[in-house]
Amino acid sequence: MRAVSANLLALLFLCTCACVFYVWSRLESRLERYKRGLQLPRSFHVGPSPDISAKTFRALLAVPVAQRLHLGGRLDVRNVTGVRDQIGSLGSRDYHMNVDNKGSVQREVPAKFGSLVEGIFWSEWLEAQLPASFSEEHARAWRERARGHRIVRLEPGCGRISNQLATFSDGAKACVRYGINADQVQGETLTYYLANLLGITNLPPLILAQLNVDSEQWASVRRRIGGLQWSERAVVSLTEWVANLTGVVTPAPLRQESKGLRPLQGELGNKTTAELLELMQWTDLIILDYLSANFDRLVSNLFSLQWDSRVMERETNNLLRTPRGDLVFIDNEAGLVHGYRVLDMWEKYHSTVLGSVSVFRKRTAQRVIELHRRRDTRTRLLELYRDSEPLSPELGFLSYEHADVLQNRIDRLYKHILHCKEKYHQL
Image (cartoon, rainbow, N blue to C red; front, side):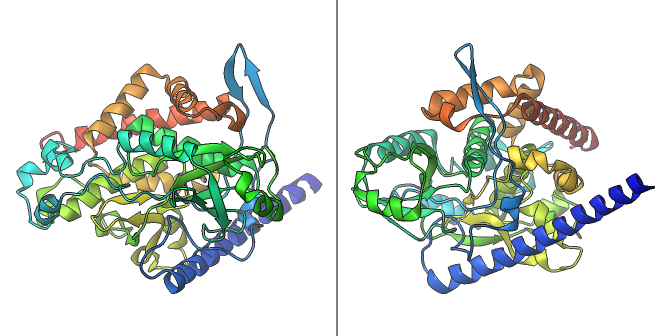
């Protein structure tokens, strides 16, 4: 009897924690949006505005960082988890590689349905209207630039108090993410490289840096770092600063009352090219969030419908839009590690969101199919991460357990794509 009572009390405690966690995060999100609209009406960095305290309820869910191990010269470290923060970035006037005025005009013109989809895939013609948001060439150049310039100023402006807006010696800016623990930085970083592996280019370029006040890069802000009480040798992330971004509302086909996004003429044929291009990017976003189990975007909105019937009519968390219409996926540290640790709480919502999509970007689907068939997602992600980021051994990687979760989600996504293909095979 005592065991039953103890279990009931434990269950009640967990439910209470979940409710408090969600209410706190929604209040925090609204406060950040209010501050962003009040202080930065014309241009703002990628990410929400500063909150009152870095010690949010979500931080209490973080698991202490595990030790890092090296086996046989290969990187093999234990899990670290992410906590909701925000992503910032290093500014660059040419950050956006898709400027095409002629193409922008064409986006407002309705297109013939036959040129929009090919079975369950967006057509090659439509994909060609939206080049990479952040091309590989641009990302490579940005990383070299960010690693090669001194930081001359650190100041508030990148969300939480623990983060800072950095100004480089050439006048460019970056948001420096200093996590409450390394978990936050790892979640953001590994999600960025997972997106790279999938060919999804909507995440701004990212690099890691190690705090060292005696190095040339950090020497000019030595006093500021001391005042922030940042730990020497801590690994931080820097992401590209992006200007003139606006919020994004969930499109009607992806809302709860809709039947979902399907490759049907009656539902897609009357939309403009611009609307279709945004929907295409949403399908990539849903794939990425499903694989990484990121609950802090559309999934959290779906969860809150229980008490807020109009949540889908407001801006989506951690998603912004450039003036040209490209979506920018920000604040991704809830994915992968932390997302997997709390998967039981959110899985039914992840499945619901994925089930709402039956049209996919062909190149993204092809990479999912390849990862399913080869069953080497962990190896390929690790190699990409390690080859691209010199500090990857310092930050760490997924545990084998969580790598298995990622592969299993790849397999489920593959089955969902097959199911959609069978359902709409007549198209």
